[in-house]
Structures are given as C-alpha cells and as structure tokens.
Length: 251
Length: 275
Image (cartoon, rainbow over all chains, first blue to last red; front, side):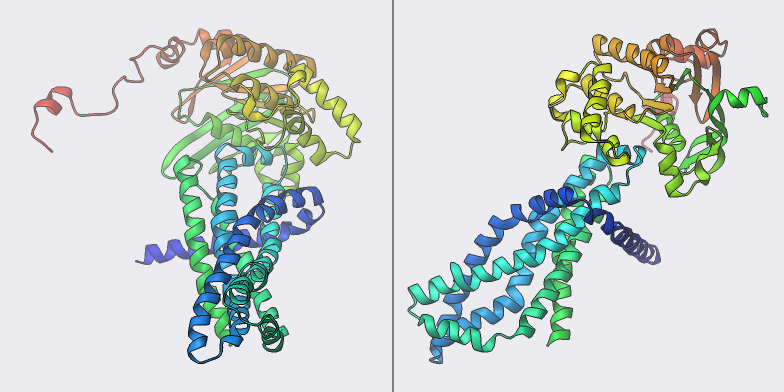
C-alpha cells in the first residue's frame, strides 16, 4: 500500500519536474517559428476535421433534444440560448479536449515514444541538442495554442454553421431572429472568459500528459503502445475531473 | 598501470578509472580501467549483454557511473554542468546501432542538423559541408532520400556522416557491423579506418564481430562480467592465453562460458519429482 502510494507520488514528482523543464524550454521553442509552424500543423490543423464534424453533430443532437423539451413548456424560441450556453460552457471545451486527447495526444505520445525507442532522442543528446528544447517544448506549446482555437471552431460549428442552427432554424422552424437574439442577450463575456480558461487548462493538461507519457515510455513496442493508451485514458479522466473542479469554482 | 606516466596521459584521449555501474541490481561494471589512445582505433569487445553500449553512454555523459571516473581530454565527464557537458559532446560523435537518424528529415537535413543547431554558418556553406561529408561516405547522391528509404548499411553511413559533421575528436561506434551483408560490412570497415586516419580522429568501436573489428583496430579490450579480461594490440589480444578470451575469439560453444544456462543436473531434472 505504502509502496504503491510512494510510486504514485514519485510519478507525480517526476511529471511535475518534467513540466518545469518544459516551461523553462519554451522560450527557445518560441524563437524557432518554422519548428512551431510544423507542430501547429500536425497538432492543430490535422485535428480540424474531427473537431468540425463532431461540433456539427453535437450541435444537431442538442437542437433535437432541447427542442423537444423546450416545446413542452412552449419555449421553443429559447433553443438558441440553450444550445449556446451548454456548448460554450461545457461541450465546447470538454468534447474538444477529449477529441484532442484521442487525436493529437495519442499521436504525440506515439511519435515521441518511437523517437525514444529508435534512439533519436539519445542521438540528439549526443549531438549536444537538448531534446526537451528541440522536440518536447514545441509540441507542448503547439498543443497549448491549438486547444483554444479548436474549441472555438467546435463551438462555432455546434451553435451556428452546421449544427444547432441548421437543425433548429432550417428543419424545426425556429425563427432565426429569436435564435440569435436569445444568444446575444444571454451569453456574456464571463461565459467566454470561463470557456477560454477551461480550454487553456485542458490544453496544458492534455499536452503535458502526452509528452510526458511519450518521453518516459519504455523503449519497446509494448512500451509505446502503453504510453499511447495511458495518454488517452489519463487525459480523458483528467479533463473530466478538471472540468468538474473548474465548473465548481466558476459556478 | 594505476598511475599512468605523463607521456601516457597526453597520448590518452579518454581514460576510465575504477568504473562501477549497475542497472537495478545487475552489476554491469565492477571496477574497469580503460585507456583510449589518441588518434587510434580501439576496439571494445565482449559478449552481448556485457554493457558495451553502456560504456559509450557513460563516456558520453548520458548516464552516471556508480563509482569511478571517466575523463575526456583531461576533463572529468561526470563533473560537468549540463552546458559544459553539451560543449564537450560537440567534440564527440556517436554512431548508434540503428543509426538513430531523425525520421522526419531527409538525409541532407540529418547531416546538416548538428551544423544548423550549433553554428551560424550561411546555408550555402552548410550545403558544401554536408555534401563533403556525404561524399566521404559515398552517399552524396542519396541526399534527398528519407531514412525509411535507406538500407541498414546506408543508414549507418549517413549517421556516420552526421557524426563527423562537426569535425569531432572522438567517434564512438556502437555495434557498427551487426546485421550487415559482407559488402556493406566491408564498406563500413574501410570507412572507419579511412576516416580515422584522414581526419585525425580517435575511434572507439564496440563490437562482438571479432575478426572484423580486430582487423581494423590498433588496440583492443575484451570485457566480460564487468571486468577487463584482455587488452593490448590486436595481435596481443589474439595471442592472449586466457581460456575465456580464446573461447570468445574462436567462438567455441562450450568452455569457461558454459553452453548451458545455470540449471539442475540433467538426469535429476528429467527424473526428479515435480518441484
């Protein structure tokens, strides 16, 4: 029991130390725009399709569900508000983070783990190049920057373009004016600020977990597989737990 | 040989004294002394699992020894700050067993990598330097290929070009001959010798391909069980009287290193009750 607890504490300590090392290496990642652009592409741009599609579907499902319930109380016109608040406050940040962990986090962990297994990271060290600066920090930073942007795109898709608006206004016949007016009236800057905080926290957590798992993977195929699985499992749980904590504070 | 003379000191590039290292509970080195003479090729031989790669990582300062010292050009490798250690590594090249090429870069960019990271040379000069290094290993024409398009022997040659791109003093080869066909083995052997002499390098070749490595090296060490069992010039090692060294050099299946893993007597094991 004490041994298990000790192992956990040791793991947390190592991960925290690793986080500080990454943060210390961030300035040297910032002065490498080409490296950052590459990572923003593979972490952010390549996650666009899944985020856009998921946002649309979630918006469509929410429109159907909310409309049925709201109709019971004769409040069908409030559909826009209901969708906007739930997406901005919860679905946008949380679902994007879960998708991000599955799409980008797993890829990061696998890539870094394989670089380790094939001695690319040791090779860099022997060439006097710090892999944390050259490999880890740009990826971490790219995750941190991509998350809020992806979440924003998810939110826009779910509320407007193809999601809630398409189903609510075009299919169910809610008035477009009252759909948007309701959102305009009820959605405040506070909601958007809170959502931004959430996405930044989730982005940091997911990226941190992914690069840590990859960097500390056992240098074997089983080790890389485990790192990838761990990344998705731990990130998903961390996102949901952090969401509860943050929501409780923002309530 | 505990206190080397001043002359020996100056002609020694890397010196290892009383090295101890364990991996968990497994003792890998138990008091090892080595001297790597400047400008020569030194072979480190030993059976698989004796931690020959570990030795290179200890010399490169990637791992810390349990006890003992490693000095590189008079500097204690393990007493350096991270910055000093990185400075020192710019004077070392290491060739990993699988090449360790960066898979997202082309051959050209792989060889240019250390130059771009550590120098502020203009791109035109980097291009010339890279092509010179690639020409030295015969792969100037392969500059636009990606590592996955290379054969094992070609990867190692690219890695070799990369290892010498900063004109290091020391190049360490980790099992350069493993899994190579006779032609690429011959190419690598010739390259190691030619580059060592032409560039005035010092080379350490870790290998268990006894004949190949002895044929190109000036000095050799035989290591097993955490100890140095034989050392000297290539001929002296070949003539070593130790039974163990002879078994290793001749590749005999049984001898001081038993064929059978530690086990109960055979008859007892077959006839005995289930334990």
